[in-house]
Length: 298
Ligand SMILES: Nc1ncnc2c1ncn2[C@@H]1O[C@H](COP(=O)(O)OP(=O)(O)O)[C@@H](O)[C@H]1O
Ligand SMILES: [Mg+2]
Image (tube, rainbow, N blue to C red; front, side, top):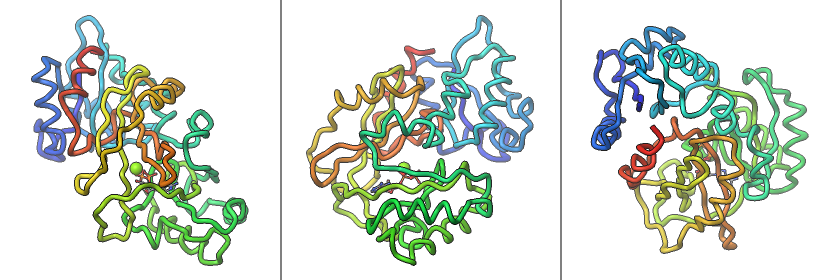
C-alpha cells in the first residue's frame, strides 16, 4: 500500500503535489490511501490515519510525502503496525538516512568531509565547539546545514562560507541558526565545499546550481537516476551507476535517495542521502520506473 498526504484541511483529497504519484500507483494496481498530515504532524496519529484501511493479511506500506521528524515517523510506524501494515523502513532505518551524522561514516570516502555539533535547539549550539569545527577546515570554503536541511536558497547569507578561517564565518552560522529557528534539527553541520560541475543556468538566490542527480535506491539497487533540477542543461555525462550501487549496499535502509554530483576534477560524489519516502521525485524523473520497483515490493 502507498500512503500520500491529503490536501491540508480539505478532507479526503490528495495533496496536489502527490496527485501524479497517486495516479501512477493506481496505474500499477497498487492500493493507495491518504494520511491527514496536519494531524500526524500535530501528534494525533489515530485521527491522521482515519482513511487508512486495515490490512487483511499484513503487507508493506510505503509513505510518499512531506518530511517528518523521527518521533513522528515512530508514531506513524507504530499506528500502521496496529492496522497490520509494516512500513518499508523501520524507525531506525528512517533516522539512518534522515539525520546525516548517522550514515556519514559509511559514505565518508565518497562525500565531502563533515563535522557536526549536536544540539536540540539553535540557542543550545555550543559556539566554542563551532569555532573549533570551523578551524579544522582551515582557510577553505564550507557549507552550513543542520542534520536534515540547509538554507541553500539563502546561499550567501545562511549557507555558504567562503573561508572558514575568516571572522565572517560565524556570522553565516548565526544567520543560519536564527532563521532555522523552530525547524532546526539534530545539530549544526559543517561540510567542506567541493567544486561540482555547474549547470548552465543561475538561480536568483545566488546558489550555484550544480549538475546534481537524485538516485532512488530500493533494497540495495539503484532503481532511478534523474536530473535533480527542473531547468538547466545537464551535460552528456553518465552517472556511474555501478559505482553507486556499491555505495548503496552499505547504507542501512531499504528505501532511500542518494543525491550525487560530479566534481570538476571528474570524481563522482554523494551530496546527501535521504529517506526514500520523504524525498521529492525530480520533475524530470521517470515516475513509472520508480513505481515499477515499488510494485514488486508491496
Ligand atoms: N559540500 C558541498 N560542496 C559543494 N556544494 C554543496 C555541498 N553541500 C551542498 N552543496 C550544494 O548545496 C545544495 C544544498 O545542500 P544539501 O546538502 O543538498 O542540502 P538540502 O538538504 O537543503 O538539500 C546542494 O544541492 C549542492 O548544490
Ligand atoms: Mg539536497
